[in-house]
Amino acid sequence: MTVQSYRDQLDFGFIVGANIIPHVQVMCDMLPLEFDALEAAFAPPPADIKGAAE
Image (tube, rainbow, N blue to C red):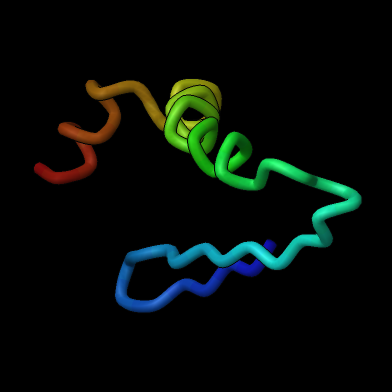
């Protein structure tokens, strides 16, 4: 898995061997749910974001 950050965006790429991950699309399809879980676990509460902007 490759990740590159540029201008507040992340770009992902996948390079896999078919003998290790035969259905890479299944793994790719799971990414949005996993990103939601990461954001829920580590993002500051909405009140903190609003307070920081003021």
